[in-house]
Amino acid sequence: MGYDIIGDVHGEATMVEALLGRLGCRDTGGAWRHPDRIVVFVGDFIDRGPEQLRAVGIVRRMLDA
Image 1 (cartoon, rainbow, N blue to C red):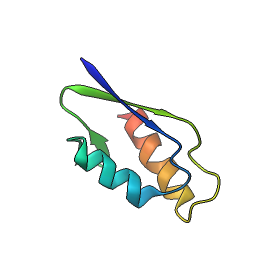
Image 2 (cartoon, rainbow, N blue to C red):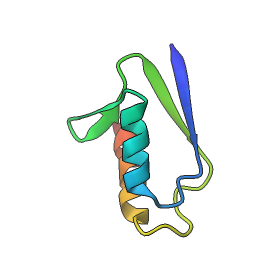
Image 3 (tube, rainbow, N blue to C red):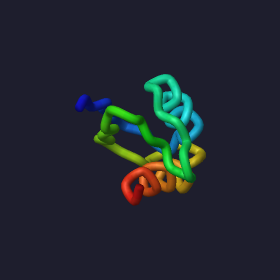
Image 4 (cartoon, rainbow, N blue to C red):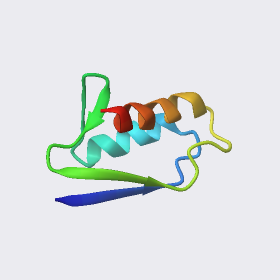
């Protein structure tokens, strides 16, 4: 099993969704998932971007899934 590491989201939810799509993840049942890899987030989820709550929500749903 491999890992994809994403750092410093900074409240940019649209960018996170685009990146997850490019990594081969799909939004399944409300959470982004990859069939063979694990996504690891490091750094700041919020700080200055316009979509801070949505960015945290994306990550939270991935954790809960």
